[in-house]
View (tube, helix red, strand yellow):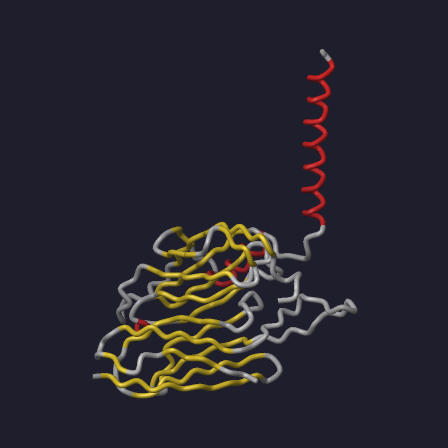
Length: 157
Length: 106
């Protein structure tokens, strides 16, 4: 009788180790990808030496996406969109896609409101960042974490 | 091959913000996939989308391989005057498609 708890304990630990190995295997088979550092570099290339502050931008994406081949994305920026104060550009970056750049939208006061939408591919569960450039030269950003069940880039679309 | 769908309201009030939706048929081959024999499939994507309103550029989007096949882009513009909105998609392999839509502003 005294052996049962230890056996149960053994199974629990063994199961945990197996799950850990499984997870490790999943990580090793993922394809070439950008890294968070590559994303930071891509953002740096766009913003130069300017400071990127969180806020004013709203990046809307579903928190859980079944199909990474098509994930809807909407970015809106708080801005009066007048000739004196408007959004110049909205850039989207991903952390773990093969390349960090996703899209750059260029708009101006004639847009009326700073709101754009498109559909993107996500190679895996990761963080997506939207950076907005305002006419006064300031940069604002928003970050969203998206869980992807079926990855893009691997299967035939 | 390249069919484009554009949704622009036919009529608008002066100063009204109108939403424009565009969809174009294109595979957006990323250049990261391999075919059955293991060879890399060449990249073939739309690089640039530009919208003009009576000849003046109002919006542009620079696309990368992370945009889905059949790129769908939504943006807005202020209805300033009656006229023509022209949309142009250009990309790899000399891909170029131009579409236009007219708008009547009261």
